[in-house]
Length: 332
Image (cartoon, rainbow, N blue to C red; front, side, top):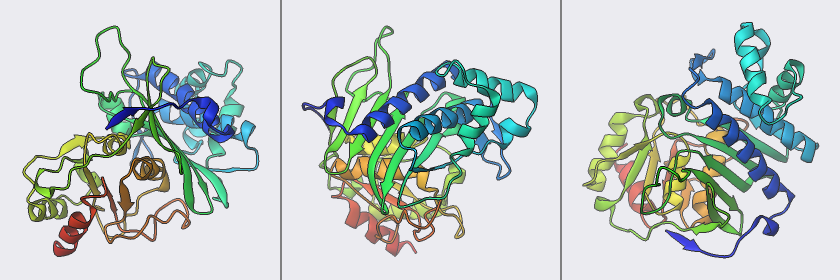
């Protein structure tokens, strides 16, 4: 649900203002590159684009200037810019120059590599393009940034350039997309593109599992489809799952558009990266929902870049969490 409440950047500390500024810059670059880039494959066969690399450089640069003592843990490294063909390197630098006109190849490489630092007691985690396949294919994607202090997510910012919250579609002259922001103890908020006001987000009040609006990844390889189907059957789900890329899914749960998100690992060795969950988890929790792993344990952000102490992820409006955990247990 979306409600009108007073909120402005003046209410935020320096960290909140920096996060929003960095994500807004990232959305400018991403928007300029939409429909113009293709994905390359990294060593682990996951996709990466010019936008991923340029945005990581921009955000890392901003965070290093504002918070020089903070660590940055991000998804990309600069090897593709440092070692790739000249064309890709030049395109990444040109993308960064949309925001930082005096950017050079050497500076961009250094900014990207700042995302490879070890997590300290206080660090930022970034997914520059969460849902890279969605970005390339014209579906949902997000820029996700979170601040973690002593293992707890304190601030989460998710920019969703293609997501519109509300009951009516935009007119051709209106911008779509927006930024979701959560601050621990301060709630979750949404700022639609082109608007000044921030609106408070709250999860849905639905408690009937059979009619729950379930959202899950667009990409089948991201999860265990058989296990997912068993749980849906045990829940008595009457509605087909909604498919969506990125942490835009978390935003829709925080906004009450969807009720439940279950992420089943594709195999026993798989663990989500912290940048895939940190910001979205705080958005949902501060909107009144609940986030755990599939066994009901809180997500543990102290084990390094991946959630090594967790098995999958369960995100809900809170009211459906117990029923979902029971169904997951029965489906083992």
